[in-house]
Image (cartoon, rainbow, N blue to C red; front, side, top):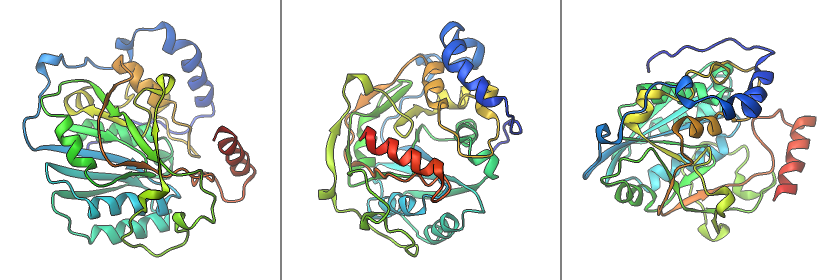
Length: 301
């Protein structure tokens, strides 16, 4: 991958992000914070088979990642060529073991692309996403999270839906979600050895976003390859390219859509499943912050 400029951790970065959210992102034009977006007439429209890159991060979520990577093995695409890019850190031994296991799986139309980052870069998700955006050779890039499962006919229905499209950003109009799972739920396969596995789809229920959430959220951003190659992922907003000493809340996803000037357009895509879980792997196990965040997630549910 190409090298993109990042910045060391700064105690002022949290303040800068809040200032951006409250002020800068509302009053300054997008063109100050990104390169020029290619005009629609200059963007490539696919006709037939094309290249897709799916980009994900993993820290403390090896069990979730197992489901995601298994879905590519169990339901490989037939109408597109897929590159699976996963960013991880060497210190996360469970994730490394999981990736080592799947690297040995030969899957038709699937190329594994597992990328090591320092924890400081991994914890600011937009750093890895920017690296992938600038270096991708794909026609379309799906930025996602490792608790999303690409089940039966997902990728082939995506291939059908993107034919002849030149739009900036798309997202699946529906998904199926699990209940908010606690740590001891069997679905979470905690501490299991790396393995191929599948979900029981009956454990998931249909969910269609209402108008207030009808947008390309962080794990559901399908962006045109020509566009992300041109502008990266929040590349010129330095606060979102600053390394972090802990996992950072992903405000950059909102910034990315602001830079594009769109919340995206919905597409009919089959087989999108989302594992919801109370405990966040990004927080230290049994920590006060983990407990607080878990309570918040349960209340939101």
